[in-house]
Length: 92
Image 1 (cartoon, rainbow, N blue to C red):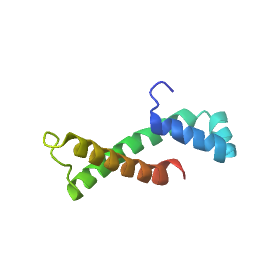
Image 2: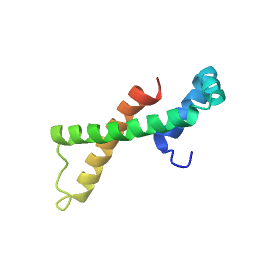
Image 3: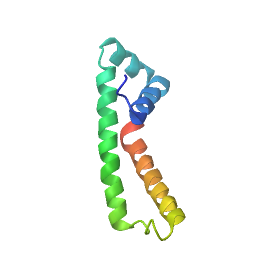
């Protein structure tokens, strides 16, 4: 569990709270850790892909010219990517 990231913990919490029987079976079969690491890795990889696609579609403003606009746009891209990941990988 030391290597587990944000998305792995979100998946664990979802399973515990909304699919407890599945969580308990995975826990008893000792495959929960592997599953959570797999989901976390897939989510991070998917996040990179989504962020690249978003930047191609809507390029970030010049960071040196307007730092606040850049931060706002980067945060918006990250929020969009996270929402997609949550729907595709975490809450299923």
